[in-house]
Length: 323
Ligand code: 13P
Ligand code: SF4
Image (cartoon, rainbow, N blue to C red):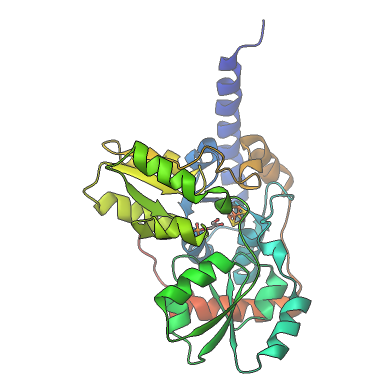
């Protein structure tokens, strides 16, 4: 029989059934970031932003965590769950921003600012977390910085998030790192201006990883998880979404009466899109690729993440709304 596009749907359905069976056999949970492909979001036991996923990883009773996201996310789950098997279906799924800092370079910067606290965005390696005082995500960065007694803060690695936090916490001095997200910086000011002209009634909701000129054109700035809450509450019927394209799937699904637009078509995180149903099935079948962290680094990185969870009201094992 000649191949038709319907075959792809057939294969995907077969893979979904296989994943369901393997999940039971392995006592596994599938945790999915909001930027993942539609078909991966459909098989999620838990989906959300980086903070929600770290919290979910702390709470799960499963023996195996299949992390559909990028390396630093699975690594955070491994740091917080030393007794569990954490799998990243595609080992090459990384975050280029997280690779823009090394623990050695951070150590050298700390020497330059001996009185400063180090806040690391979760988009960083375990070794960088181990060198930091407290972690943050895009949903709690302001709260985390405000919670510190130090006036000077070394904020790594995202300069755009750091700059945005500085505008919201003017009494702190934020020392920025030269890191950025290659996907979010693709949105140019002119893209946003054009999109606003095309959709004059739309509200602009952007991720803080976008450039400052784009953020200046935004009505609301928040994490991917925050976007769901904001859109649901808003009376507007149209939204321009300044973040990775994967967000539009669930925003549209959950808000059928509203319309969503991207400011530009190329907002694709290549790493986030590496995970496919085939790789998830393979991961559960072969129990690969296990993410591990050496105990000396893990202990310090765990303190950095746990300080963040404590500063934002989450204790290890506490009940989390929605899960
Ligand atoms: P969120 O925590 O807002 O989901 O962001 C993660 C990320 O990688 C954004 O690029
Ligand atoms: Fe990293 Fe940017 Fe991809 Fe998020 S969207 S995982 S920050 S490269």
